Image (cartoon, rainbow, N blue to C red; front, side):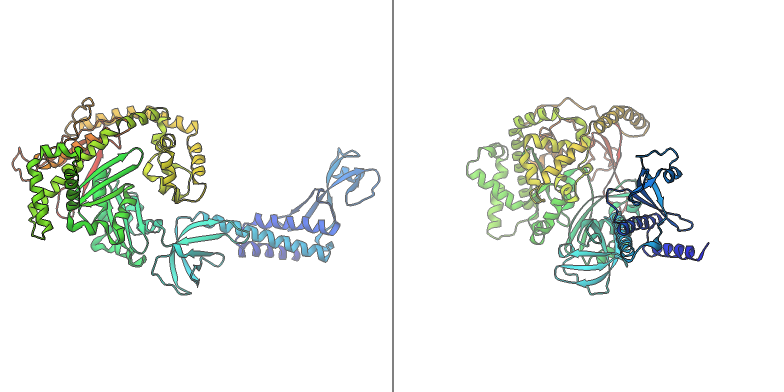
Length: 633
């Protein structure tokens, strides 16, 4: 290899390594520079085709120029004789246009042409660097990286990710109260990467909820390995966060896995997030139970779910008077986070407040409460006495508070039944519209839509694509309300995303999966019959809506009260589903074989559409929650 070839090879490799570019990218840049230099040196027209090649072994450049075959050359830069043309194209004829290799080399280029080549090389290499940088950090979107603080201003913090990339953390993406100085090392989440005329614009965050999600994945091996799943996160950076987790394997306590021994795992995350309080909650498919857990540390007395087809889902939560401030939280933070976590609007009432409202309606002659007064006349008088005693600042005994709570539950249950009964005509209309939509659409979760994360969060209460399509038909205003805080044009983006998801081929695949489902159910039935599990009772035919008058809660067990409320809500569902909840655990305190406490419960899960076996963990204080395993209906 000649000395000039050695120098070229070294320079070529140095450029590729220092700029972290592939050899092909640098070679293309050199070829484009040679073409530009030739055009500059010969004043060639842009319409004339010019190509350049570089021998990868020797580094020798070759330039090919488009020329016309003529008998006599007038312009040597655009014409070639027939004899010379047939050296490159043996079948060339006069009048043809062919590619001809020119003898001109880089040594013959003038100063202006060489300067143009240099500028093209630099421009192409910078462009390739920007593209590589964009691809590198675009793949890291949603991941945590370590950065160094470069400068701090009131509007944003500039950070250095490496020697080639810088990122910006706007004030809105910072944790309130955190202070940084130039040179500090900090862990941040890459939230957005955009192309620009210069280097890519990289936006990082420490306030994003995915920052907490990634930290949990790093600290909790069970989450990283897929044994525990994070269902949802509601976060107010620097204040408090709530995380809903569920175990995907038996014998795993999801809350204990996230907290760690003596809280060491969660404390590491708290320190990283500047002392932010983190509540880890076990997710439940039972909305009532989940809402109660989401309001921790407050203890909810009862939850009443009202899924109105027009106004949306509202949960009325009764809490003891001394837990009201805890349930609401400082400036409403606890209730606000619980609503974000569960996707239900939460209306929190103290027991005494609910009782006072009920008595006011009774005194005002509200006919809706007459059945309650007739059925619970003696109890109403007792409730009035207790409320007068409380108003006089006299001591109210715990059993008297229990009486107030039971009365409030009876009134709320009765009013909920009336609301459900009053909207039967509306539900029939909605069911008719639902039947016109492709049924597989109701199996596609909202997360499948190609939309930015803020839009997906806003649409989360609708749960699936079918519900969104239904809302466009019956109440587009609700879609607009959900997207009210989003950028302009969000509704149009949603419609485009729906068109992509509702592709006929995708729907056919879902329909095919539906046809295979019965075979899977049969296999599960065979497995269930072999296992020592009590058989679920045959589902009865749907009965008409019962009277909204509900017996006083003291007269029936808590599990039956819950069944009554579920039967009333079943009429509000757009598609009729039968639910059995009769196989309940016996009351505490019974001993012996007949009164032995059962640790297995079989019921029909309306959300999953199948019979579910719920087993309660035994053990000491370390036992948490329930283990749910699916059995075929």
